[in-house]
Length: 385
Image (cartoon, rainbow, N blue to C red; front, side):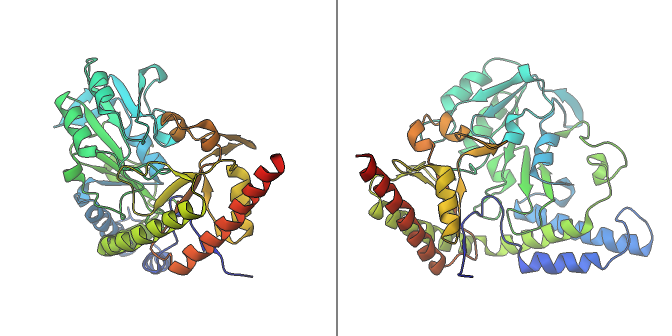
C-alpha cells in the first residue's frame, strides 16, 4: 500500500511513544488507586505523577487537576450553575457561550435551556467583545464559556481580555483549551480563566482521558456521584493506564511544544502558499487573525466537502470536513454559520491540521492530492459551462 499522510490532528493526535510506554507500565500494575495497600499506593503514585505533569502543561497546581473521561465530561462538570468561590457556594444565573463552541459546551451543561445565551463572533471568527460587554450588563452572576482556539478554524480568542470583562462583571470564566494545550502558550493564570478543560488524545495521550483544571472557583456538586475519587469531584475507579499515558504526553508536550509550533507553522504556511497559488479563488477562513500554528480551514468555489474528503482519502490523505454528519445527513458547520460565511463556500469547507510528526514529504502528498481534487473541480465547471 502506498504511503498515507495524516492531516486530522485536531480530531485526534498520534499516540506519543512516551504515553505508550507509561500505559504499558501501568497495565502491569494490579492495585486500584484508592486502595491503601502497596499495590494501591503504586497505582496512586502513577496517578499523582500524571496529575503534576498535566498541571505543569497549563501552569496550574497539581491539587487543582480533576481527571475525567475526556474533555466533554470536563466541560459538563464545569458548566454548572452551582459553584464554590472562596469557600462559599454561589449561583450563576445564566450561561453565556460563544456561538463557535464545541457541541459539549453549546449543549449548556447543567444549565436549563432558557438560561443559556449565545455570544456572536466576527466574520473572522473572533468573539465580539462589544456584544460580550452588552450581555454582561444584563445583571446577575454569569458563567461564561469561550474556547481558547476554535477546533475548525484554529482562530485564537483574546481570552485575557475576555477574562477581564467577565471578572469586572462579577462573572466566572471557563475556557475549553483542548486545541491549545501543548500547541501554544496556555498558562491558566496568564489567561485569567477560572476553569480550564484539556484532553489527553489531542496532545498524544490515549483517548478516554481528560481534565478540568481549577483556578479558584470549583463545581459545587460532582457530575458523577458515588465514591470519593478525585477529591469528591468525580466518582469511579481511576483509569490508571489512561491517566498515566495522559501525564506522559503532557510532559512531552510541555518540553517540545515551542519547537513543534515553529515547525508546524512553517509547514502550514507552505501549504497555504501552494494552495492559493494552485487555486487563486481558495479562501482560508480566519486568515487575517491569530490562528493555531497547525490549522488551515479552507474552501474553494464548487468544492463539496463530503466528496472531497473521500477523494483525499482515496489519494492517501486524511483530512476532515467542516460539516458534521448525523444519521447520514450533512449539515453546514455552525462555526462558519456564526461567521456569516458564504453558504456555498461553507458547504465545501475542509480542515487540514498538522502534528508534531508531520513532514515536508507529507505536505507534498497533501498538495499532490489537492491538485487532483481541484482538477476534478475544473472539469466539472467546464462540463457545466
